[in-house]
Image (cartoon, rainbow over all chains, first blue to last red; front, side):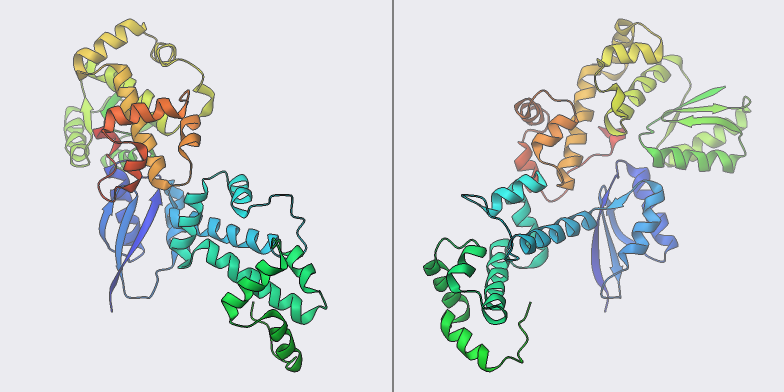
Length: 191
Length: 187
């Protein structure tokens, strides 16, 4: 089945750019259905065209694919989350993840979080909560860390907050979870 | 022998023009925005042929001195705003133009206004706003960063100017989905 696929291209400023891009894509056997400044739509039978090939063809012309940058930013956000909630992060007073994000990326929080939501199909908040809960499970089962220590290491304001969030997301209480997992040590914790 | 070509705005334009010259078998020393330096004067036939070819791509060969000079002013501004080397950011446009073109700024500005119907300043603003639009569409920089990048004294100044030219605020513009940008040669 044929479907449309849209690229965002950086560096296009005039009609010659559009012409040159159409021609270059044509040489790759790709026919654009629509090409405007900064945006090219193609028809493809594959599930997804090979972006690396296209990027490589466009680069000598002075263009680059925009999507790549966005994907890269989202990847960096994910790795920041993983770094912060690794269980070994030294949280400053009044720590807020959004502040850290803004400081690291020099972009507004709204911009970053909507970009994340757009590409990941889940909000950044949701991703962070999931990641933290999984981390709680990991620490709980594989290390002998106490619950109050876990709460501290993952920057929950209190044990009560941690318990409540855990219950809300897993439907289980913390201690119940620990007990049933201890009986089934062969179960691998999902990342 | 130098040919002056209207509507060249980027490296792709240069590339396309180069292809046409090669095809026509014309030898050239140098090609830059708006200008081609030929090794030897072309025949009338060659010029006409090239002119038709270039016209189909949206270019135009300028044969009168005054339009050629106006075109040079435009190319200088476009190069400065869109394909910038940073070193020239601090200079005033008027100083820069008279240096580059070896003419008195007053002369250039009067000539530009009389042929184009807008002042150089206005043209510069339009080009700059077009660049702001481009950067806004990429969604990679905050408005703050864009203002700094393009040498605006403050975000407020940028927003005000943007509003004046486009009739909407930068954030309203961000929410538009279609037809957001103009080709630079049609600004």
